[in-house]
Amino acid sequence: MKLNKILLASSALTVAGGLAFAASHAEMANSMTLVSWGGAYQKSQIKAYSEPYMEMHPEVSISWDESSNEAVAKLRAMNEAGNITWDLVDVTAGDAIRLCDEGLAMEFDPNELLADGDDGSSAEDDFGDLLVSDCFIPQIVYSTTFGYRTDLVGDTPPADVCAVFDLETYPGKRSLEKRPINNMEWALLCDGVAKDDIYDVLETDEGQQQALDKLGTIKDQVVWWSAGADTPQLLADGEIVMGSTYNGRLFSLIEEQDQPVAMLWDGQVYDLDGWIIPEGLPEDRLARVKDFVRFATDTQRLADQAAYISYGPARKSSAPLVGKHAELGIDMAPHMPTDPANSGNTFLQNYSWWADYRDDIDAKFQAWLAQ
Image (cartoon, rainbow, N blue to C red):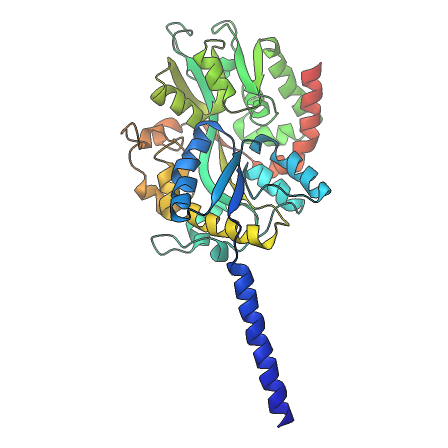
């Protein structure tokens, strides 16, 4: 009898505890701060993700911060201060790996956090190899490539990426991102290093110096950019002949703004972009973020984003749903970096390699810039 009473009491406590646990997890914060890159890409996220989510949840407000290019440093500082003010952060795959390794991003089970594909596949199968980190929630495949002013390159527009280093044929200013990633690869490629050998060469001090020396041949003609909007604006203003940026930014400049600019797809560098959830969020904020992420990365939402910008959706099940641009009405397939006509000579950024070597090469690159 006594044992039965104990079991009943224990069962009651378990039920009560379970109800309390469920109730606490049902409570969600009604505001979120999302971090992204600004410009056309962030606009596509707002159109495809946050506006539809807020229509379903009118009690929720979402603010945006455009600091993704500083995400690693800022999350380190927030963690040290014990004050995480961001709820969800858009980062490249390489930065996601670094943040995960440092314990600054939350690990998750994709089949628990993310929705199944509309084709019945599990999230893990639907995203496949793009789940490159236990903390990374893929959204898109994009590329960093070059745009050039069609009215400033004469009668022979550039056909390969090494035109960037050809000041004789294409005089004038260029723009390059103010970081070593991509620039070092292009420099070695255009200095005669075989594509398959680039990361082996770049692993050595001599290879790093070789890349910097090649970049040095155009250094005084380079405008260095930090924000994704910089190169499109420089091209629109005619201040540069050619410059690197994200292919979606160039799509917006060419197709939406009708600027005299063309794409130089050769040598484009594929990369992945997606969300990380900062480690250490309060329970109510984390519950809201999880709800939003499950919605924003489902099959339909990723396909919807491709209607606003020329980035390929990360889910296999989303690809058949990609159609025309939501406003321009043009077929989006020819504007994707993965289209066969655009992908004859490409790199897949070695994000694992850069996660290992980024800090050291960053320091060397910034010292070279200051010389």
